[in-house]
Each structure stands twice: as structure tokens, then as C-alpha cells.
Image (tube, rainbow, N blue to C red; front, top):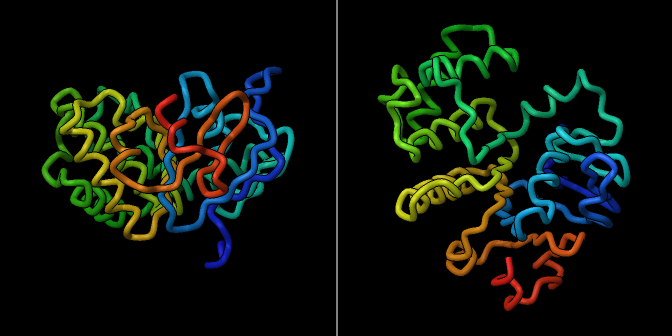
Length: 238
């Protein structure tokens, strides 16, 4: 159980690895239950590796981390699906099944995460699609949707299990500016309803426009604007 005074993410003295390579070292940060946090850094600086570690796609070998009530150190394979039920994961490349309708894409995730009651599944599917502005898209195939609409489906999919936090890896990276703005406003709405957001982005315009906390991967370290590790001038150098 996650108590109200406990952070959704707590990482201390951690090192992030890809194979035998150390990507980030001495990582220390927390994310509170209602926070919106940007994750920035140059390509290859460790953003995706950090996110993958948080949802247990990469093992945490050194240090301590607790995410949504689950300790990542030595987490058993059988427990990883339970961890991920408490997370929403949004990818840049959508990862929708192209041969299944929007509804079938969502039902697949629901069945995989333990939903069994078909009436409740349909109700939740309709609810999340309405919430992202796609109430009429259930019977459409992914190729019938625009890029922005497909990303909204991905966000709906991530919201199915009412996650404590959304982990988003460049969710607007392949979208034009106007569509990106709409997707970002959707994330803001989700955050205002109490879901924490950790969003990796290269969109400097967002950083200039919104004064959310920033984590920056740089030279093997994770810098934190909350602790004044990041001079504002350095944000340009992503």
C-alpha cells in the first residue's frame, strides 16, 4: 500500500546499467504522488535507461529504489506485472497492434493485467477513450487514426489500471507542434487529477513555457532542478 506521505518513486545511491556499461551513477531522487517532472538530456545520456529501470525492464543492480510500493532491488519476475499495473507507460513509437481495433488493443492489456468481467472491461475502455477525447474510435484500426490520435490511444491504454504514475518516453517526439501541444495538455489534465508524470522530452519550448521540475541526464549523472543542480542556462544544452 502507498500511504499519502510516501513518494511514488524513491531512488537512492543507484547506478543504471545497460549490460556491463554504467549509464548513470549515484542517482538520487524522489517523485511525489502529484508531481509533474521533465526528464531531459542528449540522446544516449540515459533517459530511456532510467525509465526502463523504473518499470523493471532493466534490473537495478546497485543502489535502492521503490516505485509505486514495489522495491526494485531483486524484484522477482512474477511480481513485475503487478508493478506495471501501478504504472502507465507511454512510448514514442505507440506500439499498438496494427491488426486489431482500438478496443481490441485496450482489451488485450486489460486481460493481460487480470481483468475478467467483460461488462467492467467495456465500461473502463469507453471511460478512458472518452477521457482522451476519442470516444468514437473504439472500432477503428490504428492506421485509420492520425499520429496524434494514436498517441491518445496509447495514453488511454496507459490509464486503464488507474496508475499512480505515468512514465512517458518522448511522447510528442514524432508529432507536429500543434498536435504536441494537445497531447501535452492532456498530460497536464491527467496530472491535475492526481497522477504523477515523469516525461522524457527534447521539446525545449515546453521547458521554457512551464516551470515544472527538471531532471537532467548529463555526463553519467542525474541533475535535479529541485536541488539547484541545473543552471537554467544549461537547459539549452540538451
